[in-house]
Image (tube, rainbow, N blue to C red; front, side):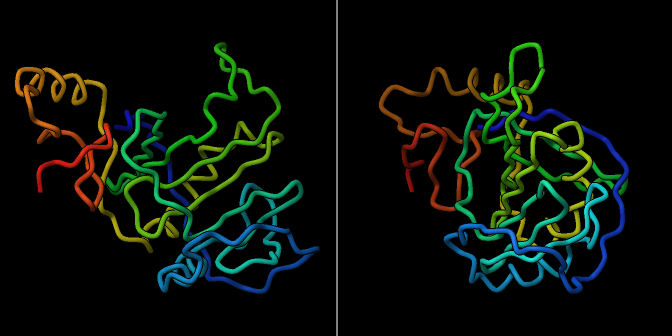
Length: 203
């Protein structure tokens, strides 16, 4: 299951969707781009992000900003329970938005980026949102995700990341109850009742 890395930052207000400018950015449409909530997601995105103005795209339920472009796609495949890095952004009003760093392996052990883009997918949200930040703006990735708080709020919250302490507690509590059982009661599960091992929780 995802482990949290808390981050407390100041959220900025989002603006209503207005006309995009510049050359359209080519993006593959997300599998669930036609989800009704994706329209609300796009309307809740800002017109300026990381000092880049909005740009048009050539696919449904997507938008972009600046050059090189920060891109957003709504309706991507929701990440299952995972041990991948989870960035939990705590907003001033107490809300928390979880993002899975899908390409965390592309970052060196000393924390220096290898010059690759940074990809993030909202965790525990339906529909799921993907945000890709170019390598040139890698140091602004957290701020970008904070400024997209309105877009995340337009989606349904169904699960959350958990911290390392909660993971260890759940593993310790279930260690003695696995003789013949295929699931645990304390692990994060998806809507189908599947835990991080991919087994059914007994429903």
